[in-house]
Image (tube, rainbow, N blue to C red; front, side):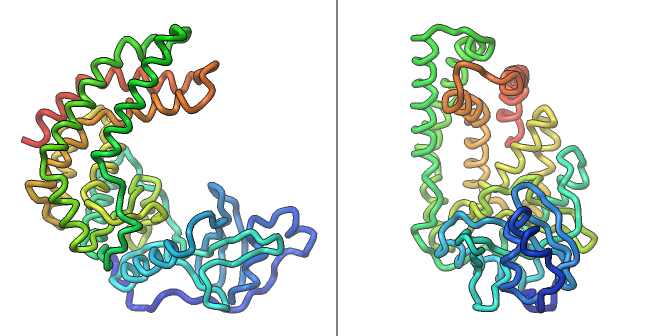
Length: 347
């Protein structure tokens, strides 16, 4: 991770924006740039946001839908990381020193530092291990005084809730009768996955989870919350980390679990890859025995099964997409590999 010696990025005078009629039709927050000081050279749409090439580098405009109080805390975290040399998507204050700017219709937008690069390739070993190293490095800097409002949801409560939801979906399909491939496959396999889920819940209850949670509170440990291949940009200056909006205080190895799970699903639960990812992280930020225990429990919980089941239940049940059915069938094909991974990776 490249060390930066410059202060937080600042921007200057705006020039050369589109005319008023064009802005109304193709704005996406572009008009709010008048509240900053920079020169816009070009813009491009990307994933619900607007990328801006300027005389001061690349920035991104997004509509803001969160809590301003949490945003201020997020900026405190990002500023800390930036000052430690981490490439992160810090927010840019406007002329009024506010992180939020409003367009003429009162819609709030934010402006963030962005980077020239590509997303982490989830099938590239080099990208994967580089991203794990980056995660370990930022975790070492991600600490702030605790604000209890932003503590992560209890994993024990989450597992209990998910287990109840799986049973509810089972009752629903049984009562109406399975009428599509997804529903038939669900009833065929739900008992096995429920058993895994309830076992993981019980193991968590009698584990060191609460001790880890209290340690995280005491140290003010912060998690990214959504660390995945889409939020790591491979740049010429090092890896940039973006998408911190789901940050929370909590057990940081939860981030490692989420990143690993995404990668391992794509590599058919390769045990060697899993071990190498753990070792790569551990060489930079040591993983305790309690964290290893917690990681093993997290991996043993059928998160993907719950996610696909919940998607089915909360969307149109009259028509299940072919894509969702294919994902479910892939999950079923991988279940023995997943079970073996959980048994062997943490030995």
